[in-house]
Image (tube, rainbow, N blue to C red):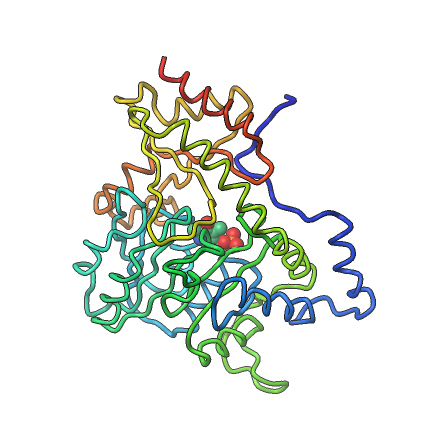
Length: 369
Ligand SMILES: *Cc1c(COP(=O)(O)O)cnc(C)c1O
């Protein structure tokens, strides 16, 4: 098929720009373990993200997993099931128990009206997700965390570069974890980062990403290997130069989609959030079969026959995963279940043309007949 449209397409700098960036590596022979590219990217990110502290990581998942480990937690962690496998897995792989809070029906982030009643004397932390780049109810999460002495670790994988009330999104909570996976708004091929407040936590994190090595002859924690290598850091340095342009293009496409689909009966779009500088990471559409005239799956299949690949994201919910053997009761998160069965994210990347966006909208609207 000549005109296939995938749900995303990874951003790349010009070939020559990347080659120029990695030339030094052939001079230094320093390929990983916190080299000059790693240090440079770390520094540039601090200013781009508007945060005080950051630690680069091998991916978003290890950012979450090692942040939880560095906090030395025990017991229950309140989170949501409307997320990528990584969020729940990071909790479970730390020997912690996820407790699932339902999501807000508008933003699909943690419903803070239900959060407080899930707190028990075993709760140690909250792991909310800025889903699709929609910002969580930060004030309310902070209030509840302070009241009960809980840590807050944001899964900010979707929220790179966003600002809330003028502040970098990574400056909220005890830690915020970003993903720089190839499919995200900003990529380092694979990569991630943790932004945090407490410098001691940062030192622990630094050691945990390097096997728990404290000094040449001292290894005092059971760490992992989660260092970002120099080639990935170099990709990040290049991609960061073009990011504002890419986000501006994503904005135009998102607004085009919104103009075509807003107000159509049976279609729900995410709200434009007040006080949020968005990165236009995703464009989710929720289909109400009765009102719209076609189900999410019908729209998905119809687009697929036209060579357009959307994504049922997030579906299924993490609390229904086979690996958990029915341990969690999905009826406790009915809104998340409802949305996961009806949501579709549309193709969105800087190189998508408005003609393509228009074709996608037309096919979606034809599904009604
Ligand atoms: C992508 C993603 C992750 C994991 O990031 P990786 O870099 O792929 O390890 C975690 N949480 C969410 C919500 C994500 O979308």
